[in-house]
Length: 291
Image 1 (cartoon, one colour):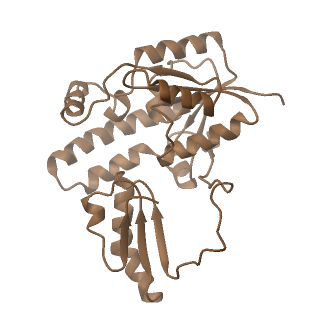
Image 2 (image 1 turned 180 degrees about the vertical axis):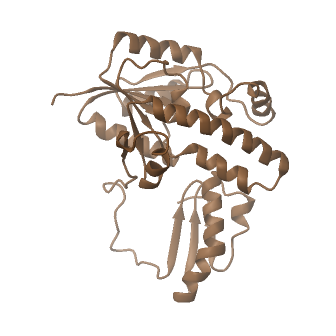
């Protein structure tokens, strides 16, 4: 089999590679590029970032970048943008990535059948793809997003936030089901996610590509002594599912471990730990904002 011409569609910047999703995408693209002809299409808000585009070209020659020119928005501006989009039917986490300029570029590629296959990197990129996909297209699901919003809507104590989470959950569930059904194939990161999405589409269309570790970069150092009884959680601490996970572990799991392993300790490693994470700090729990 010869080289396959692949278009990888990515919303937001890929570099620097910091989040779990970006690490996963970066390494899969890197491996594909060693065997096939891959074009990375990265579009992002804000003005043209020459340094980013230069770095992306260095990492992936032939990459195509597109700046939408829109303000990144934060704080009250993001809140206002949410209110303006509220009458629509799309979940905000997806709608905010919609771009006419991106849609025009993608329509052109699809019309010209410029690639053998397109990989859509998650739901936020799917919003800009044509309704009819004239090229076989794969949806890469980093997680089942509606399940995360469902948990938010169930566990949030603040009534106003819970109402917003319920709205977003309902919209995300409908959107995600449509997208999973739309694509020729779906990549899942776990059997659990595959099982959840199998309720929406035939399971044979879903392939699991489990998250792995770059063994060329991360390997044991025999000169460093291991710490007995140390459990480490590594993940972004400004992402709600990770915050929920470490809270649950500290409440429900760690006491059971300590009952069996004397002196067991828990280390939480990840960027921007907030108050909920920092309050877990104690004699047997360590919180650090970096690896």
